[in-house]
Amino acid sequence: MGLGYATSNRGACHLRGYSPASELGVIGLKTDPLAWEGKGALLKLLQDLHAFSDSLDLCKFSAFSEGAEHYAEQYRVMVGLDKFEVADVLQVGERIYNLERYYNNLAGWGEGSDYLPSASPKSRRPAAARKVTSANWTPCSTSTTPSAAGRTASFPRRS
Image (cartoon, rainbow, N blue to C red; front, top):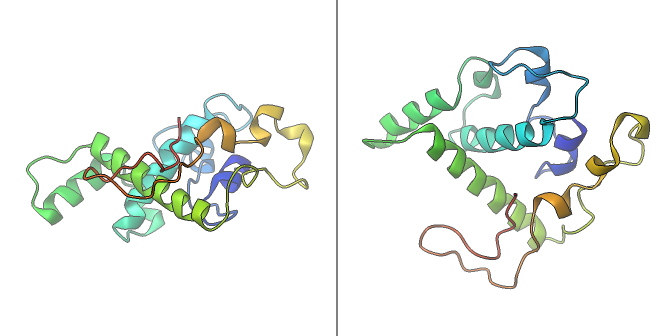
């Protein structure tokens, strides 16, 4: 949860990528609560998925019974598309999350903003997890004009 707090786009918020759901077994993907391996990728997946569901103004509790497949189908039907798949949900979610991050950078967030609080128990977190920004987002350039595809080189992108 610490990585989620550190990388949340609205401060230390457990709702942006609720990774304990996988540790508690309340979603389809079960993970070991004591293992660090794979938690970064899981958090990114959940942050992107929740960014998409937030854009639909869905209740967070829907994530306990619905997944990306359901969100894709709901969106496809609502807007009348012939095709909208899980990959589209995750791509849109990633773009939303990166755009939120971009606005935060314009407001002064940047290198050093994603440290876990010093009050976190250091014995329970690996050193590599303490600083998330430089490993997950690239620095912003000075360009702020999105391209026709909704992307711009200035958007901080997660790897």
